[in-house]
Length: 222
Ligand SMILES: *Cc1c(COP(=O)(O)O)cnc(C)c1O
Image 1 (tube, helix red, strand yellow):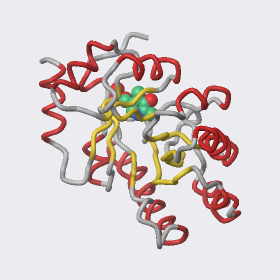
Image 2 (cartoon, rainbow, N blue to C red):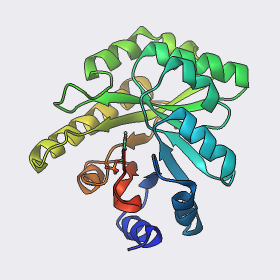
Image 3 (tube, rainbow, N blue to C red):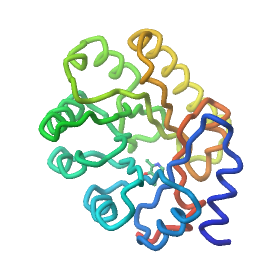
């Protein structure tokens, strides 16, 4: 199966209202171009340097989503062009994105990353930390970031029940946060969850953005 075929297969499974972030990290420009030719416009990357090099050499109507772990000193390189940053996991990072966005004169879309998986290694706010950050209210002064929703990853497990539980808990948190802090905002509407091996479960649990890599581009060598 070609990249274009894989892409079409994934797209055919997405209900209305669910968008695909094609995760192209560690794959060359040629792979992205093939998906682009097949109509895909949203791509996800996890390293700022790699994403910026791809941004510079590929068509300018691509929307680049940053899905990796953020390093403060690298934020400024993607601010001029990034369409959405999925991995905000501290107030400090949100404030830093805002600072760089002010300098660049643009408003940057961000998702708050929530830790719902059982593994220790995953990044993200705990639900409690996230609510504390929102309660503190300082984020309201950040004029150049737009909090568009939440992002999360389920545990890397074969246990479907556990994956479902984690995605459902993220969906409940999304609704609670929307009702509490974003009642009058149209912009808090994205729930980024689901990867190659669990996007069906994520969609059933209310995902609006699935981040699918290997199912489209094949296995990564790294
Ligand atoms: C790599 C990555 C993906 C895509 O993973 P696949 O299993 O290849 O679909 C999705 N989300 C994040 C945060 C990633 O780092």
